[in-house]
Length: 220
Length: 114
Image 1 (cartoon, each protein chain N blue to C red):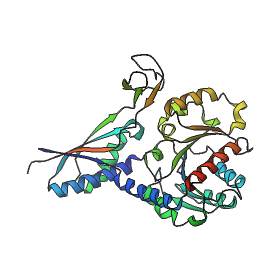
Image 2 (cartoon, rainbow over the protein chains, first blue to last red):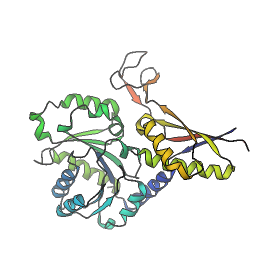
Image 3 (spheres, chains in turn purple, green):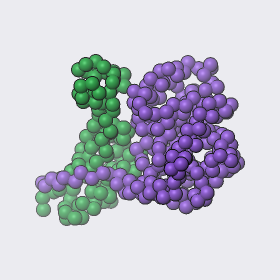
């Protein structure tokens, strides 16, 4: 028997595409946010509301990832933004190569910000670097306040966490204080936003953060 | 089930190395950080299924899971992080920083003797 030391990253092929994507975005000064959550947390509603409330201020494009259908891309287009739908046909996450291709399906030259709405899943997508500027986690109130403790990987890596559906707080036992404490143990730098994409509550602070992100990318 | 994508990438890397070494890989050792969310059983299952018609058929997979570590900001002590007991075991403070998660690595391959 002979043993050979390899010490090579297993996902190197994905990381090479991610590096290309990062360079592509940097050249064009466009930030890109990889939005990760469970299915049903309200990612698409949140993006649609963001697009509507930032109309005239920020030009947004969206890459949608779902196992099947183009329901989400249609919802985004209805909200007034260009969208490209990726169907993963069973895969539980998006890969950097898919994003490289999708960039060319968006009018990137006139965009200030790109959202990637990943496949609804709190585990797998956080392992795959897409070359995004930052990862964003969305946690909705009905899912329960134990999610950061149970699925720490995404909360440890997210630049911002949106706690969505806060209009349902009074109907549940969701403990915001506990969630905030758990998240900040995993990630002291992350920014936490309390929002309701349905009622629009809290959207202002989130939108302000996005405008600052875009300005920073432009060097303004 | 991102283990399927990981198994696929792993098989490609081992196969390329096997071609270079002109040998049959009998075992491969990998390591992964806890935040990679790799389930050993799922990875073994995917690896076995995908490797069926490749040089990696019957290659034994050794998986080393590396825990998340924290560094105490007060005394520099490095310890295994537990969200429910995040205190430094030495000074009992909660002033810590999480160390970066270990990457998903193919560590070594064992080849059969020629």
